[in-house]
Image 1 (cartoon, rainbow, N blue to C red):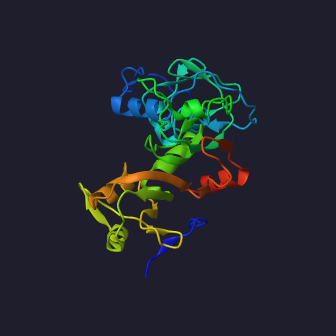
Image 2: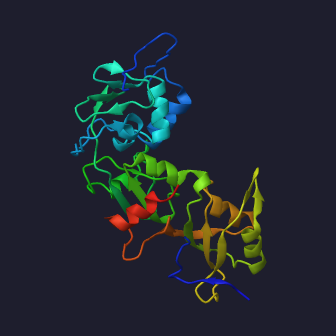
Length: 294
């Protein structure tokens, strides 16, 4: 009996300032380990000009402060602190537990930081748009589509292919972005795909059980014909894999050509009432739900 996806399918759900002391090796950004700085600059570009948002009088741990400024996730912020890229009131700080007071002047890579308001936007990405911050060939990117959404510097969480349409999340919350793209969290994604050839039911069973592609196993959490199952060209597939082009590779493994691919759900978020090319700010309930993903 053919399984099928329905359009409304729902997801499952003390204080000291460190300095360059004996044995303390610090770096300029240029001297920092390339594996770290490449990742930081690519995933969480440091925003030098930010909109200041008033905060309480309570001191904030330095790694959290950097994350709230949009520089990096907390874990990566620890590395930035450790190698001496963070300055407070003119002095390099390498102490992990250091807490920042509202009156402190914090600098990263020479730029003065201020806490910015955390923003979260959802875009229904159009076709033929790159999900990158910029493009050397001048092609249209998602940043062009979402331009003007807010004054804060927000960035896409993860990527989807240029010709793939559907949901893409944007935020300046480095901690949340890191959690959502981390493989261990297995964030659920639901795609609807159209294929050139008729997809055979036994192949769907194999995709559900797992297919060895390259050096790893890829599998779908759920996969079935869309709707009443009468059209073998339309497939609904839910995955929690973060591997690049996982869906495409599984279907290409069986010789199928995908002609259309649309991400209809991501991390419990739906594109309901969100037209192609439009974006909206997440509700407080949606943000709180995403914050529960660990």
